[in-house]
Amino acid sequence: MLAPAAGGALMEPLLPLAMAALTLAGIMAGYRVGMVLAGSAALFILVSDLPTAFFNLLVSRIYANVLSNWLLVAIPMFIFMGLILEMSGVAERSLRAAQRALGGSAAGMGISVLVIGVLLAASSGIVGASVVLLALLALPRLQETGFDKPTSAGLIAASGTLAILIPPSIMLIVLGDQLQTPVPDMFAGAIGPGLLLVAVYGAFVIWKARGLPALPRTDRPAPLRLLFDLGPLLVLVVTVLGSIVAGIATPTEASGLGAFGALLITLLYGRFSIAMLMNAARRTVVTTALVLFVMIGATCFSAVFKGIGGDDMVSAAIMAFGTDPYTVLAVVMVAIFILGFVLDWLEITLILLPIFAPVVAGLDFGNGLTGQDTKIWFGILVAINLQTSFLTPPFGFSLFYLRGAAGDALSTRQIYRGVLPFIGLQVLVLVLLILFPRFITG
Image 1 (cartoon, rainbow, N blue to C red):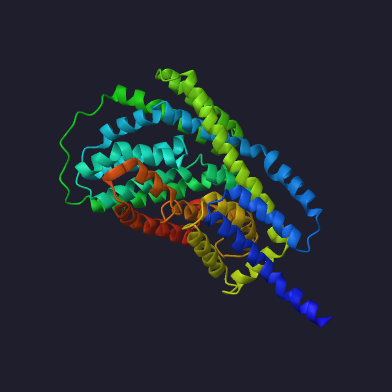
Image 2: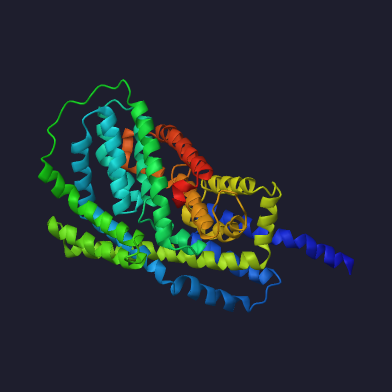
């Protein structure tokens, strides 16, 4: 009787490890993430001692966590809003106006790229659109001012990734849902760190611009023209974000308001067309389906992984480094950072956050934060960390977007060199937010 017991004890930690390894191998092999997550869940129900009735539990979890979650309605609406602003040329129009208004010096041109990145982030929330637009419009101008190619590449890639952090952000909606934290509080908590990140980027750009010659003076746009080009987009951003943070509207309601407002702006500029509307709707459906498919697969994976003891294994592994709260937090942050080299933010969020969040939420960091504030603080730290995954080689999506948009103007080596300082700045801001949590919680 002792031999089977020993074998069962041996198998306990092996099952979660095998499940994690198989899932990672499937994702790295290029299979659809949602299918890999759901498939590994189904397989390990069969090979473990979980009852086959566990499949019924998965169905109920999918319905409760994904299909009937009204908060997730905000995701397709914000995607639709961003696509309308991108496809209609409204975002490009605002970008060009900001460039003309702020491009009076080399440092001014670099700062203008950052400002435009913030505007695109707050209006669209789509990293790909932000990086591509900035690459097409700002890359030639940055090089004209004397910025070297790596710095230009790094600035554009980093500015574009602000779209995943600055509210209204799809990432923050998903994080709030996973942490059971009000999304308006997550949005409010991200504003300070977002501005801090922009300030750090700006200081680096100004330092890099020292000694560069001034640009030839160009006629600045008339104030009324600038107001017409930038005003509607700014009003849309303030209305959507302000209504959420002030508690006037839920994120779902504000997302509908944003989508409707984007359509009104296209009408104002004479850019509206039925063909554009239908194309944006189709792309929204496809993107939303992909996101929800991953969420369904991750729900299955998380339930089965916990069922076979994976959460206990991960907790024990983290605690093996020590029980000091900041040591535990450092281990979690390092794990997320390393996984960001090979996995997408959505995969990391949906697979790891249900495991890591309870561990961190139960710790006392001695920083005056308790309960919900600790969850918000931890959620924003994770968001900053996940934003870095867009910049880290070899699978950072911003690097792919920039390489495709820049063509022969930039090499892959130059892009990699350019993003390294900005990755360092991201880590610096992450450390500052750990040491000074009031940047997040106010």
